[in-house]
Amino acid sequence: MGNQELKEGIFSEIPARIDISDVSVIYNNRPALDHVSLSVPHGLQVAVVGPNGAGKSTLFKLLVGLIHPDTGTIQIHSQPLGDDAYCVAYVPQREEVDLRFPVTVQEVIMMGRYRHYGLIRKPSQNDREIVRIAMKRLGIQKLANSSLNELSGGQLQRVFLARAIAQEPHILLMDEPFNGVDLSTQEATFELLDELKKQQVTVMVSTHDLNMAATRFEAIVLLRHRLIAYGKPAEVMKREHLAAAFGEQLFMLDGAALVDHCCPPDSTEVNHL
Ligand SMILES: Nc1ncnc2c1ncn2[C@@H]1O[C@H](COP(=O)(O)OP(=O)(O)OP(=O)(O)O)[C@@H](O)[C@H]1O
Image (cartoon, rainbow, N blue to C red; front, side, top):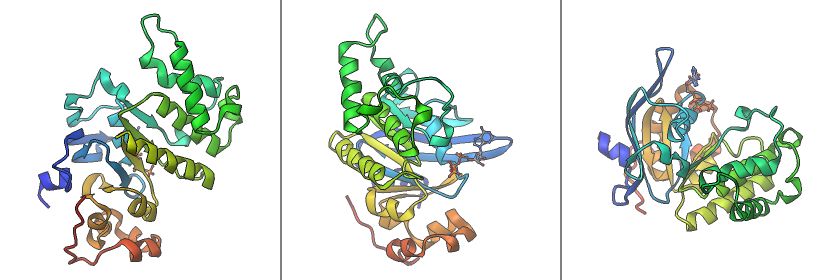
């Protein structure tokens, strides 16, 4: 694949909402991301897959403005990533959330409205209504006044999803949302993704579950510091791509996922949208 082809997958006909060009992030002289170029079009739901330490969280932190690239540029809606980063909502890995802050569920979800506050910089009736609807949508109304540190993993996940939808984002990034949560939270997450699809919200979700990535998402980004492959699942889940991403770990992956979704190395099958 040429660089441009790799960057756009087969999605070049659709205008890009996220445009990453030649982006590197270096920690202690080692690249977490190595000259990655990637265009994600409006409304696409993408799984981001790669081994531990491949740079998936780093990619999300860049897109939400928490860290800055050492090389390259990022554009959202054809504008450099800047103050308008509020149109990007981020659901972090639960391990990264500091639960010591004495905040209630309702207060955390209201943080999603912060950038929408009017001139008086206080939540309006409309903000309160949006927070109420987000809690109802995720089935956590009864937890409104609970502290974060009283919640289970699944409940915490729902709180951060509710905060993200209260933000009314154009782009939603979710870091490992399916890790260690109960089945009903997984289902609630997928129902939310279906709704967001109708609203043309662009979604990127990191996961270790190759089977889920291949069956539930429209496209896959395969990362190992550099971009290994990007496109529809059938194109990406080829043995040579997986071997480049996972190396020896490939043999430890879920066999079913590989048998079901891995095309032979010489496969020319390409499914267009
Ligand atoms: N703040 C930091 N300081 C130093 N190194 C870091 C920092 N954050 C990430 N790294 C390193 O950058 C690389 C990419 O990390 P990142 O968390 O983005 O990977 P990941 O694909 O999300 O991993 P996982 O699947 O295990 O969550 C790893 O080698 C990690 O150790």
